[in-house]
Image 1 (cartoon, rainbow, N blue to C red):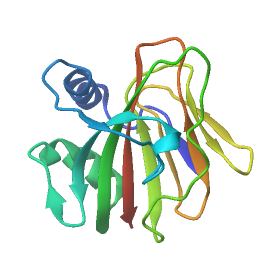
Image 2: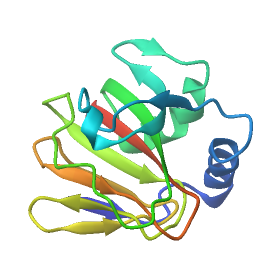
Image 3: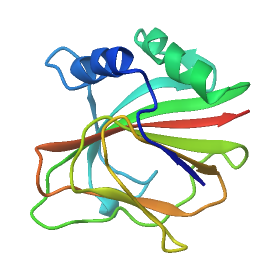
Length: 158
């Protein structure tokens, strides 16, 4: 597992952050946080890329893709989880792609985090990325101090 602070140069990060947190970015309601599990709660998502299909906003990810050294891309999905009164985890899971790496890139600083089943905890700090093997069970934990917790999840091979 690798945690990198200040992953993108400040200028690149500021552009990405202001767009994703702005009024004009299209978020889509998703009735679950874990695929097919309606008890896991809701979230808002944007699929930049999945299985060869790219959204109109996919070019925004080029700098990240290049910096991650992506050779084979499976999915790029952004998650927006609303503030909760208490911290809530979504349930430990493996992403649907069972090979390669996962990178979780944090867009805003808040008191939420990514928890790994092995006990490791990575705090949500803007412009931080955590890169790990796809076989590590993990869960997102909501924030209680900001309106939303926003991140981008990359599934890929190097």
